Length: 124
Image (cartoon, rainbow, N blue to C red; front, side):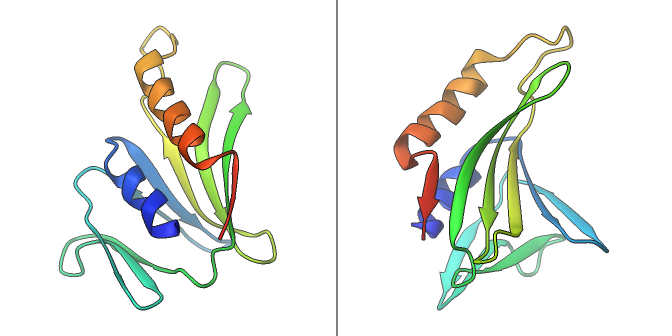
């Protein structure tokens, strides 16, 4: 199911995939990324391309849809956690608001459809 949800995310333009730890942050846009799996490794992007990531599918235990209220807007994302509850990967829906801070309801609908398909919290 992890492969399925990542595949669905890559079909959506303007998803920002973020891997973060205390020493580095990597950000990759979903636009035109490919996905493949070989044994436990899921690869997002092309190995020969300028950016790609490898995800150990055996270490991701939970995914959760998160709507975070901010002072001027709400952020929409899906976080992927390991067995210790540490976030491994975040998939953030960008371009959710226009220049006047109005919510893009088409983008929100895409987020909600994905959430309805998988549920708020997914156990792998």
